[in-house]
Image 1 (cartoon, rainbow, N blue to C red):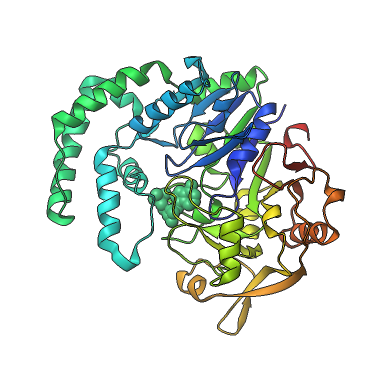
Image 2: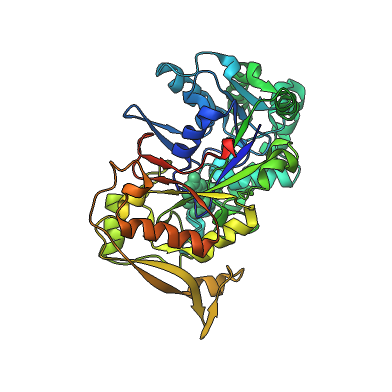
Length: 431
Ligand code: IMP
């Protein structure tokens, strides 16, 4: 029996959705443990594209249990829309397929209003958030004023908490952010409707997971965003507001570390980032445009174009160490077809010195120059390749070199968005 965590090893958008979907075949339960609907997982099954923001990717498999853990911030409106959309597509027909933690915090309309207004006021210094209220919801959680799913279920508690929050947030919205205030009654009414629609899904998910694991069920923990966006270990303050490292699985689900047996880091064969913040290997020129076009690099949640760059081994090594990654799934190798030379960033140069470890200093990160090693490119399209030995020799060399530089085994290579466009070298559930 094995439980596997799948996390992003870069700045998010590494293609986790596809890999989670693939490994869901071996899992009984798929669990989200952090983030919210800032995530966007694009899944292509039988040529049909589905984008999920909140519900774990297991939703597309009829007999898998999907769990939203306590570490997730839940926008009930979005969650209900997603449930309805999935049902319309013929998925998710049994309501028992979804369980939501009582302890997950709710995203409220004032969180979204604050998130968006702050970004506007930051101007040039904006973080480039998704505007979904993620940061303000986590702030309230830590400030001990957040509203949890269980609080919503208890009318009296909900009223009291909402009243207190609305009073405070309205002052902040009006006086500091110069925004419109929110109406208690309107908000109370809409959340009362959500309450009844969500009630049957809510439970103590930590207990549930414990019971299921004792019964021998295999669990897949599905990360959102990526390690370099971790609030503690990423490019702070250009990060998201949760712990995206594998350690977040434990605090975000109420499952102890000894229950996580394999940690798979997902990395693109190059690098992308949405939003602001340092990105040492970013390409400002035609090669970046080629990656954007060939890799269809537009955010699944906001549609924003992603910034593109070369593989940054300093960042991925950091992710490997921070999360204890046991194997890497390398995605989008096919997108690199056609480049004569493919650089790999092995270190940074700053102030005349070579930097091997991911710096905490924003200043160093902003001015770090990549030290590149050049690899030979290849011309053959890879989308039909299904065996590692059928990859062009240069592509094999590229993969093997990445493995050496990040000191971690590559267990899967993805050569296209489809489920079948995958070269599986090792299944983490079978090790
Ligand atoms: P927030 O999570 O909406 O607060 O945004 C904070 C930062 O994380 C911004 O740079 C976002 O672009 C980035 N971010 C949030 N979610 C994702 C994601 O799923 N993929 C990539 N970047 C993300």
